[in-house]
Structures are given as structure tokens and as C-alpha cells.
Length: 118
Length: 107
Image (cartoon, rainbow over all chains, first blue to last red; front, side):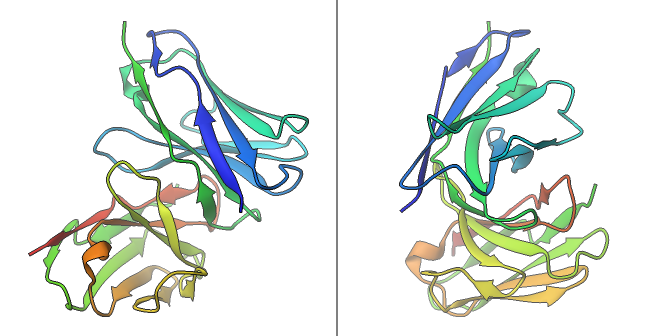
């Protein structure tokens, strides 16, 4: 059974870079589309972007200038970097798999709360 | 970007009730729509994809319908574990977007 697990700092200072990793277990990362999604407290879900196992990426235009997603197939992990963060980037960050270019997300990681504060 | 508008935003119902949640897209998306259930502090759980296909393991009391711009999620007989927030997601084009959510509460 495929499982995803997010990890990274829970507190990031304003103007710094948020860095998270999603570890994939129970299956190989060498296929499919690997996504990042976030949810500010009490608000709805926002798709951040995906990386295809081969390395191609697609980002939400609203975040594109600040986002980078990478994959490390040797570690079965993919990562998110979001630069120049502000309080508006405070959210629970989820990783999730999509099996095709236009398919739904399943499974999801449990999510990790990242707070931007000095 | 394609906007998804769910209605209602809040819904109060009782165990055994039949409830319907609507998701409207700002432009036609064929059947590229998914529904998720989210409980507090948990990740979303996929219920339905391709507008009407039940995800494996999801109870048959959940059903989805619609195409184009209007979609519905129906729960035929509410169970205690169904009280949660439900949201739709379009998969027609990038960027993908989600509806704002419908919170289903116990009456």
C-alpha cells in the first residue's frame, strides 16, 4: 500500500525559504505525477504544483515565481521549495500522487503545518 | 483559471438523511471532476473521480453525477462517520483548483 509522508521545519521566518520533503513508501516513485497542495488554516485547498517522475514540472502561476519542486528517485522522495515566504504562506502542506496528467489525487500524505513567523 | 463554486457552504442534517452537494464550474470541464472528504486534522480522502466513478473502498451510499458545468455529490443515507467537509476538484486543465468546501454538520 503506497504511503506518503511529509517532513520539514514547522516554523520558517519571513523572507526565508520553506523546504519540505515527501517520502514515498510501499511503491516506487519511478512513475506517476507527484503533487504538492496546501491549505491555510480554516480555508480551502490550493494546488501548488507537480513533478513527473522524469523531472518535468508544472506550477500554479500564482506561485510560479517562488516555487521549485524536485525529485530524488534514489531516495524515493520529492521536495518542495517556496522562497520569500510571508505569513500568507502559513498552511498545512500535503503531498499526493496522481496516476495521470488529469487524474485525481490518491493517496495523500497526512500533511504538515508550516507557520511563517519571526 | 477555472473557478469551482460549491453550494451550500454549510449543511446541517441528521443520520439517515439523503443529502446533495452541488459544485458548479465557471466553464465546461466535461467529466474531469473529483470529490473528496476531509475530516478535521486529516488529509482529504478521494471519494469519486471522473464525476461519477466511486473510488475503491468507498461505500455505495456515496454517488456523483454531472457533466459540463454542474455536478452533484449525493449521500443516500447519512452515517455518523460521514459528518465532515466535502470539496470538489476539477482536473480539466492546469492550474487545478478546488471548491471552497461544504461542511456537513449533525443536526
